[in-house]
Amino acid sequence: MQEAEFADRLRQAGGRVFLVGGWVRDKCRGAVPHDKDYMVSGLSPGQLEALLPGARRVGRGFPVYLVAIDGTECEVALARKERKQGAGYRGFAIDCDPSVTVEEDLYRRDTTMNSMALELPMGKWIDPYGGRMDIEKHQIRAVSPHFLEDPVRALRAARQSAEFGFTIEPRTLHYMHACREELAAEPAERIVAELRRALKAPEPSRFFRSLEAAGLLVAIFPELHALIGKTQPVAFHPEGDAFEHTMLITDTVAHATSSLLARFAALVHDLGKGTTPKEMEPHHYGHETRGLDCLRAWDARTTLPRTWLKAGAFVIEQHMRAPLLTKPGKIAHLLLAIDHSVLSLAEFNAVILADHHSLPSYLLHGSKYLAAMKTVHGDQAPQALRGPEIRDWIFGEQVKILRQFMAAEE
Image (cartoon, rainbow, N blue to C red; front, side, top):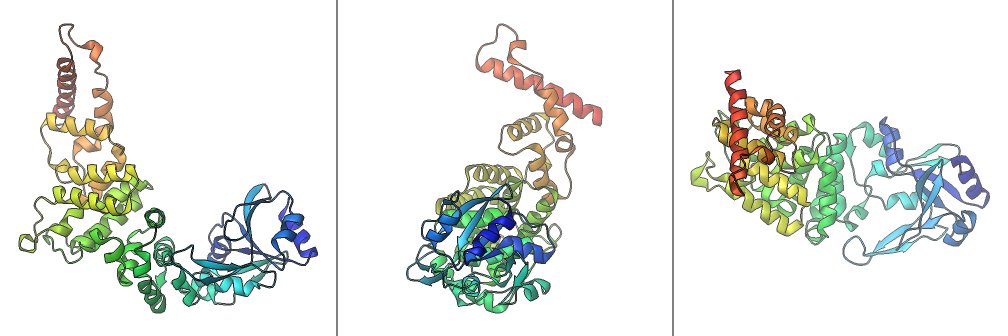
């Protein structure tokens, strides 16, 4: 079904049809809009189902349908009002009566830039709460106190700040702070989902800075909050404390690669500095070991994706020693460890380069070195060797190859 036919069919039955959500917001921002979501007012679920016999209902607490429009499966929801009556994002009473207006539906949404609609087929803009003005001001602003009813909206506002480079206005920061207690009880997967999207943003640091401005960083990501105020040697870290350094490295890696593994590894690479005793500062001896403990504590609280956990742990362990290795045996061991980790060499290098501003030759040419080292196989070993002896022989031959490369570069 084409969009024009879809809208006309519902309008003839007395309904009104609107494009809503991210597509409208991005259209207004001048960005390329993607998935279309539709909202329908003036019709009951029974009427909508009769008019769209191929629609598949997917909403549990309220009617949402998947409908094939212009060759794409799109969400179509009935206009609704919500009333908070319990904890969390499921604690709502839903009213999707045909009398619910578009303005009432938009009023329940989180921020003004997400509370606009485009009526079909004529393309009339519906913007009762000033979303276009806030987009022009590069500002994130809550529509109303309804913002408080789903605490994850606080994370969403911080994440959108990172995605769009917008600032969050003071009243909305106040609302975010008020979500603190209830947010702590939210399912971990909702928090990880917002973190995932924040790490995909052009400048992930805006997410964490916005949470800190709202007083939420200590509650949601205490291991990162602990980095604030942890001094570092100025000669190596002129950017400031360990938190500022972490934000800088995370953004630098984000500019270099779209890899979520690399971005998360950058975020946690210095996590152990948050537990450095005050009397040891500005030095952070042993922060690699303490960083692993911090990462485990984060995972115990939130349950991080397994690949994130492995990537973060590997970089925490290796980020200080990697630029300092000179002996072929240790270099060979690390290159092989990288090759067997969840990180690619390029992802590992992105973090090391951001943290140390340069790469040692063996990492810069690591792909070539590894390819040559992998030409050694167990079936090439002397026939008299058995078991671990074969493994040791393989590694010895790999070190010889690496030593030859390194000698040629001197």
